[in-house]
Length: 291
Length: 289
Image (tube, rainbow over the protein chains, first blue to last red):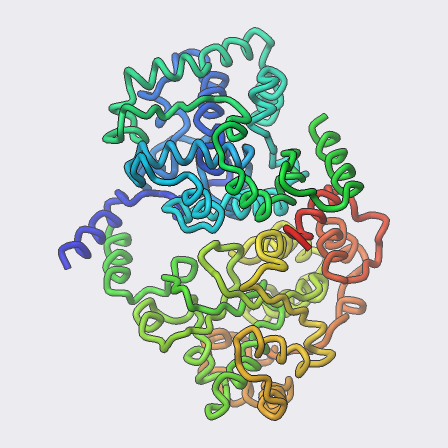
């Protein structure tokens, strides 16, 4: 009963977490990804690009690009438009404009495992393979966002190819940050010079974010009261799964999502994707769209 | 603030209609479709199949196959399990057992056009060619556009356990055959007589008769124009005469790849590949076949 009254009051005061019930505005732009796919890095890159006048840090990122998964309805309502909003939601048709970041799910699994330890959702000795099973079957705490393939799949099939949707691969962002960020700038309608792009990249580097996390991690909504011995900013690299994931775990991920992975250009090691011609044709389309 | 307080209290007491915020149980089965795709017919078929002793009608259908948009949270929580829930929602990862009914979007657009006339949202004489662009943009329902709704479910669930895809057109062709698939999905013995009975009790004629006497009792038809029927043509291909060619072209340009995937023949096949269809097509072909 007390719990009920508290909930009513929270709701009445707008203190409930926005999340999926966020009131979306027609001029909102969303940075969407599955968790652990480079969303925070992208947030910093974009914040440094859009708000070049001020140093972006964990102390002001929630004001510049608020996190709908962490902030209240009231907080989100008070942000002046046009808002740029961070989200992990699977497809939501109300989102008018979306930058979607995808990352190799094998790396996402490894990163998520460490994150779950940081959040004390699992113990340090929790078997990685068992974790991956939960990751694939959608039985982890994160299942509110759907599984990786549900999250990526719903967005990509519903929106890819439209002018209001930009698909980015975390791996491309790592390998060619400047080129990819230029695409992002265009998507946001920002005319950024090479110098401005480099400055945004420099101010968002993994090393810089690690330093900021050390100083400000205790106060940031996402890392507050979490284990500080495991960093939020992980390896910021691609392909770590090759040395960390057990073979059976790789096989489980690929057998569940191989086709979607191959469509996104993530090479499979335990099975062949569907017909090669279709794959190639699909990749050609992807490339064309990128150009 | 006052409004949120009232709404919050109704919420706490479970008096609100939960809609998308429905509390989902693992044994829930969903009868899912985009609006105007044969959902009500499917509900009648399945209700008559599941509960042969209670012939389905418009006064009990919301109890037999509850609708989270029309029943309160409290009522929904008290329904006997497993619940067979009617829904139009676009993809929701919590729904684990889904019967998805899909219909040619050209017919869906036409049907929705007439339904909106019935609800007084469109005046008589409103041109369909002005309605279709809004339909394509997903502005006519809170469930995403037709393509977003269908693609979201197919890309995540097609050819996986816990998902049964039915085409409205196949149901029209042979309802008993399709209901047989539903029976095995729901693990009901495929008794020919029982299925034939369910089909007989759910024909368009039967439903029209029921609508005449009960339209004012049912949540979806209460307070709407009674001169435009809810149970309409119950046919496929009405778009060929009911929609102007330009509107058809527009629908096909937006969703041609999905329509082809579902076996709907295109009138303008050459104009349809502006969306990167190959990519979507392979995504849709599922994990391992």
